[in-house]
Length: 75
Image 1 (cartoon, helix red, strand yellow):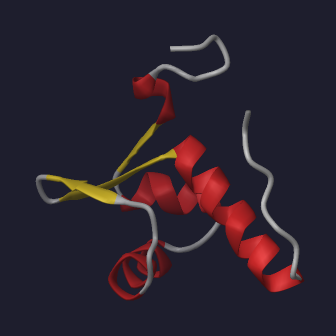
Image 2: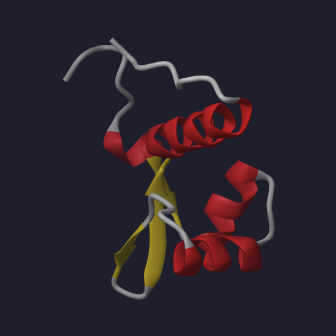
């Protein structure tokens, strides 16, 4: 693992509330995104989880798609 990558536990968002807080949306919006799009989340048991680093990339892709620009790729 490179020094630029966060520890997995520091990168993990555990639960819809944590994901919603990170993104600045409601918990309901998180469940909607998980159910209706290619939102990059996964389940650990009954909990929805996601990685901060992956969500940042997903947000950049959404921004690029809507602006017509290509997302930046990490080296």
